[in-house]
Image (cartoon, rainbow over all chains, first blue to last red; front, side, top):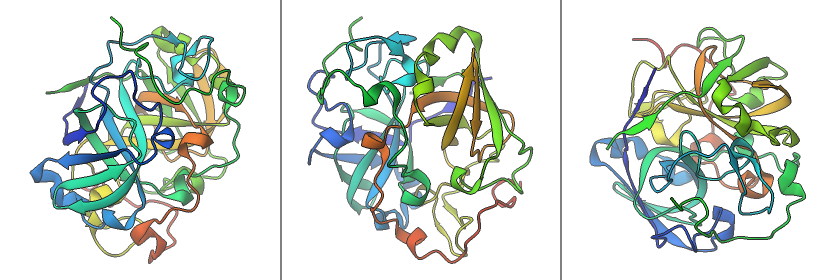
Length: 159
Length: 159
């Protein structure tokens, strides 16, 4: 079975290459960006402007391929890729909770981005604290993390 | 551009049809389920067991197709599909934050499921409160929602 996924737009950011990109939106301060939704899908944005934050699902188009074990940005030891947020995944689908500033037609102005410029957009979902916020759950190796790194290098994009 | 997405496993749940399925994991109590990761990917699960919750990304295989405006489960009025979590999306990729109970080899035992039985698994990511938890942000129409519905009907699966 193949899942037929087609981009519904493009994400534009100041980050043209992996090195120097924030590793998560939370480390991105007010970095601005925009999401251009293809015109045929713009109607689906109705009422999204009431949400402070949105999930962007996108294709990590610069991922050179999957690795099952990786040394993630916040550690110096290997972990299984599914225990990390690294882009080197079997299906390189990125998930970022960005801040929604405003919507103009089919353009979303956003900030707190950790996404590479030109990433194909796959989906947008509203962030709903009732569904998505679990402030106190355990976070495994990340709770005992060995680096405080907030900015990426190119480790997942070397061929 | 097409994104080549291949299932990496299957999600099994007690929910064989949309009607009666919880609309989000938070409404699912202790509903148990399991995630079978295909053997070649099992190595990527290393160290995931330290996380209380995980994101499952999956293909909404029973979605009959995209609608750009929907009446979501928690309202009686239409909203743009990207302002809802409804499965009737252009790319029907589901996103659920489930509870991870334990891992046995390539099998994840989970609870708090809102996922239909047999859904193809696309990705697993750890839930990290530092990255994912925003308890106080605005949630648009959902903050003024007109129903307290917690269980789905078949509205998104009628042909």
